[in-house]
Figure: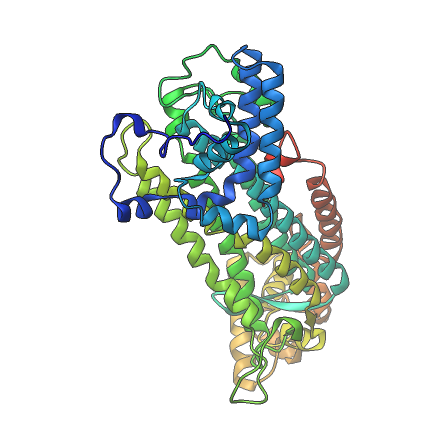
Length: 485
């Protein structure tokens, strides 16, 4: 019985003529959905459990199928095995490959597994499992980057640097405060991805092709086995829903935006014009023509990759636009954009190592933080404490800055008599008030750059990052979540 050949196509009964050979090759998805083998195996095992419970399969048949599915996964887990799937001569997609593989091992029993299900629900389930696993990997990468940023913030101690608005020097801040700004971005990214995972964590198995399974399957069995919160509520929506891919890719677009902003600042700060940071040689390259160069290739590539993520998000959005219910072959094209961003977790892990290897030039940053009148806001605040309305204080300090510019000096280098020409409220304590440390510490509000506030923020960030390890999105760990990624 095991030598009997299966039908050449899963759907061939209605057709009399073969497919055009070139069209057949052109429309196959096995060349990219091969990577869904772990998810297809997990979902197939869960479906077998539901069939056993419904007494469509015997307990022994269910055990045979599960064992065969595990062997298919094991036999094809290596790079060579994955290549053999991609190059399979007849399989249309990963579902067809697994069914053919089961037939080779079990004969007609291998075909019995497809009872009560459709490829429409299979791919909807596989993709949810795949995206859920990818989300966990991205979150792990974001946590690693956030941890590296916090470690750099701790190492920075009370080092100061200029902050910028409009790319012009604004006020002095602690370097740790600047680093913690990116921690906030990373933690928002985690929250956004968790929201995406929560919305998608429902199981399409049992939805059939469009109207629901034709057998009385207990859908909660497969949902529980795969770590879903429950079954989907509507079969038409379940088989045609790709919102979770859109959500995932748009969430990654924001991740990419944050990475590109950090990469841009590091690229600028590593230039001779800034000189705030030294690029680690392990993440830099040289010039084939100019011997002195150390090029920021890593940050430039990180900055550029957001375009690939954004392009994937736009591609899926356009592919879904205007599609009628329920499943349409167009949806096959939503897979490759989802697979095209597999580089994100590895990029985040590299970024964490890169961030930890950065060396900051504290003296250069401190010098920059004390030139260009960055203490002007503190000067205006001094006058406010003396009872001067802020608008008037702003005008008085602006006049003082204009005089300092004319004389080529900083505010702290003006004499008291010069300052009193703009307001009698200026006194000897003014110079202490606009000293660097006091200028930093006057921002003594939650979220501000005062030294004590930043120390508190570092401790809070460490707690939030540590909590990520125990606050998992996925209900279940193991093959359905992590295998194949």
